[in-house]
Amino acid sequence: MILHPHFDTNEQGHLTVGGADAVALAREFGTPAYILDESVIRENCRTYLRAARTHFGPDALPLYASKALSFTGIYRLVAEEGLGIDCVSGGELYTAQNAGFPAERIYFHGNNKTDADLIQALEMGVGTIVVDGDEELTALDALAGARGKEQKILLRITPGIDPHTHRAIMTGNVDSKFGNAIVTGQALAITRRALACKHLRLAGFHCHIGSQIFEIDPFRDAAGIMLGFIADVKAATGFEAAELNLGGGLGVRYTEDDREIDYAAAIAEIAGIVREGAATHGVSVPRVILEPGRSLVAAAGATLYTVGSVKEIPGFRNYVSVDGGMPDNPRYALYQSRYTVLIADRANAPKDYVATVAGRCCESGDLIGEGMPLQRPQRGDILAVLCTGAYNYSMASNYNRLPRPPVVMVRDGKARLAVRRETYADLVDLDVTE
Ligand code: LLP
Image (cartoon, rainbow, N blue to C red; front, side):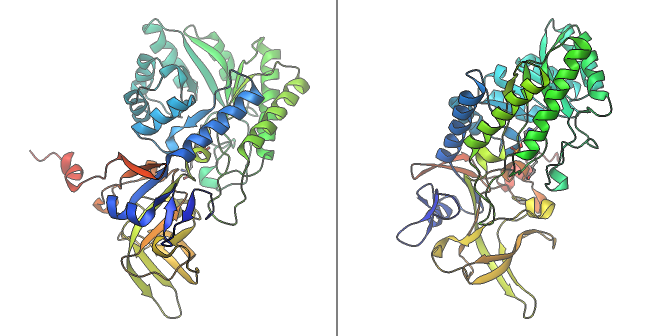
C-alpha cells in the first residue's frame, strides 16, 4: 500500500491503481491521463450515506459537491449510490441533467446566479436552491411566480468561522463574497424577507466553512453558531428551520504527513454536536445535510505523466519536467498544495532523489510540487501524482493550447474511458474563422 490501500505495486514493481498496472494504463491511454478507482468513490459514497442515515436519521441525504469532479459518468455513479448533489453553475446542472440525475436531489449553489441560471434550475425542477443574497431572492421569487412554482430554498449564512486553512479556500468568514453574516444582522434580515416571498418556501439554512479541514472543532463551532441562529430566528419570527446544511470540507490524506480521517466517526461526532446544540438552544433537531466533494473523490485519483527532461542544476535543484502541469493540475500554483509523487515503473525502489516536478508550460510557476522525494527518474518514465481525483480535472484549462487529458475509470482492475482526451481539433472547434 502507498498512502491509501488502492495504491499498491505488482510483481513487476509497477504502481497499481485499483489493481490496474499504471504503466500499462499509460501505454493504453497515453499521458497525461487522470485515472480514477471507481470502487473507492463508491465506497466513500456508501460510507457517507450509511453514517448519515445511522446518525442523522433515515431521511439523511449526503450531497456530492460536484465542483470537485464533474463529468457525466460521475453524476450517474452518484445517482446510483443514492446521494444528492451540489451544483454551482448552469454547466454542472446541464451535465447532471445529461446524466439523468434526479433533479429533486439537486442543491443549487452559487454567490452570483444569473437569471438564466435560475430559470434553468426552475425549469429542470431542481429540488433546492441555496439563495446567497437579496437580489437573487427577489429575482428567484419573481421567476418562480411567473412559472406558477413554489420553490424550496435554503439561505446561505456565514457563521464567521476560520477553519485554519489556506485563505484562498476559506469561505465561511464574515468578510466573504458568500452568504449573509449573522453578526451584522444581515442573516436575520434576509430570513425575514425570504419568509415574505410568495413563491419561495424557506426550509432552512446552509453554511460552508472551508475545505481540507482535519479537525472537528470548526464544525462544532459552525453547528453551534447555526443552531443559535435557528433559535434566534425562531424567537424573532416564529419560523423554525427544518433543514441545516453544514457544507463540505473534511480533509483528505495527500501525503504521509496528513493523518487519515475516519469519515463515519466524524459524521457521528457532528450528529452528536447538532443534537446537543439543538437541546441547548431549545430547537428541534433539524435534518442535517453534508456536502463533501474532496473526501469522496480526491484519494480515488492519480494522474499519470511521462517524464521528459531531467535537469540537475549543481548547487540549486533538480527539475523533472512532465508532459502536463498547471493546465491539468493548477493546485500547487494556486495554493502550494502538497502531493505524493512516484515513478510508476519502479514504485518499490527507494525514493532517494529530490526534485521539483515541473510542467511543460511557458511559465516558471508551472510546478506540480517542490522538494518532492521520488525514485531516480529518467526520460520516458511514468510519473504518478497520487490523490488527484478532486479539483484537478474540474479545474483544468487549455493554457498553452494543451488539450485536456482523458479520465479513465478503473474497476476490479479493468479500465474504461469516462472522458476522452481532447484533440487539437477540439481546440480549434470553437474558433470562428469565417
Ligand atoms: N459546499 C460548498 C458550498 C462548497 O463551496 C464546497 C467547496 C463544498 C461543499 C465541498 O467542499 P469539499 O468537501 O470539497 O472541501 N479548489 C479548491 C477547493 C475549493 C472548495 C470550494 N468549495 C482546492 O483545489 O483545494
